[in-house]
Image 1 (tube, rainbow, N blue to C red):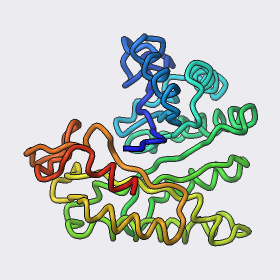
Image 2 (tube, rainbow, N blue to C red):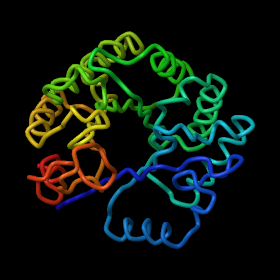
Image 3 (cartoon, rainbow, N blue to C red):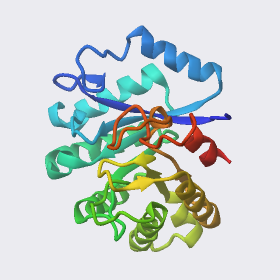
Length: 270
């Protein structure tokens, strides 16, 4: 399995603007298990990004006093791990905190000015019919601040009525995002807009259990992604890419008992 890139998640607020893995005060960034992980990735020439935030909303921006302090937290992570880029996973309650969102935007702007070659990705929830107004505003604000970034759609866990072809829902969401981005970047051409867009489905059984993203869905979505040449196609998540009999979404397997270990990953990499 020729895995060349990976995104590691999540760094959150451990306590009072202290960046920690999984938002735990005890999961210090400097713990040897994390240092060894990054050393191993480098030794195997695997590029990596680091994701900040996550669905539970324990974002650093909530406890950091201002954008300068938040930038310092980002810089601390960068100086320690030297990632290819940062992924800002903004969903759930953080989207209802405009002060925190503004701190994030301004901190990213400071970081982007100092480290222009570090990739910035915005990961946001979506429905097949498109993204919500709060995330549209977020994208517009990032663009207005002259920040170069990509947009990664969480093509998953929509609503119980979306229980059919999960690849088609993801494709629909991507097309709707492209339509919106056309208005944000009127001077960019079709190819440039598609390069901004990334898609991340949740493999196997989703949080809404009647939504199931299958191996066949991977092939269909990958065919679309290759056709339009999108910026990136990912999956949530590597540690779930194994079989089990569970009939609801869980962290350590896909819920599909007929798959083999890393079937999804191998299909994505074809």
